[in-house]
Image (cartoon, rainbow, N blue to C red; front, side, top):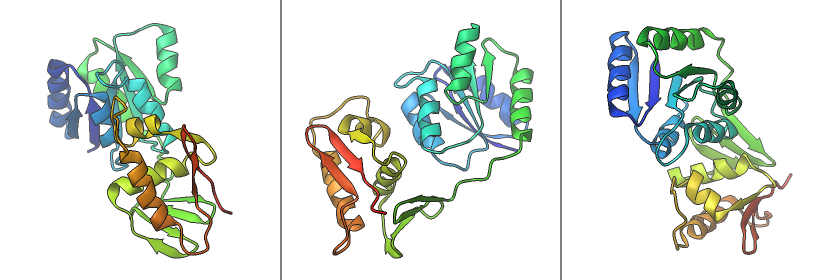
Length: 225
């Protein structure tokens, strides 16, 4: 019936939820950490996301905030043992569409998922335009002024991340965390190497560079038109 991504670190809870939802005809995949769940959730083919509030590696609300900032609008149900009104509000403001307090009945979880699936779907974003640059979110290809640009998967994610933040200073730590899913900042020039390769592909002869260095801080994506 629906393609469900479950992000839950408690194995017993996860196995019970997966078994119940599969028994109701849903296709379910399980991730047990925040970073893994975030990486999987970036795939826009999911019909619904069910995420625990407290996760190892990255908080569930942080996962939702990043997804929403990247334009991922998959309906999301937050599971949490935190039951106060303030916590519910935080969950909804972070990007959750519903909030279910633990412990819960599996029948109620299934009913809430069905209710979210009945909501009218938002038109899916298929093309991202910033200045003269276009990014096709379906084929993962880019064009600048009509010139096609072939991107490797990591280059695509890096470019999409920067295009969604035009004019914003983007630090290396942000890129390590949000594009590479690292929970630490390694002593490495990995980011700079990928930025250099991406610049080489984006900037044709006579074209202004779209990615500017901010000395000692990081980078800024500057639209050219």
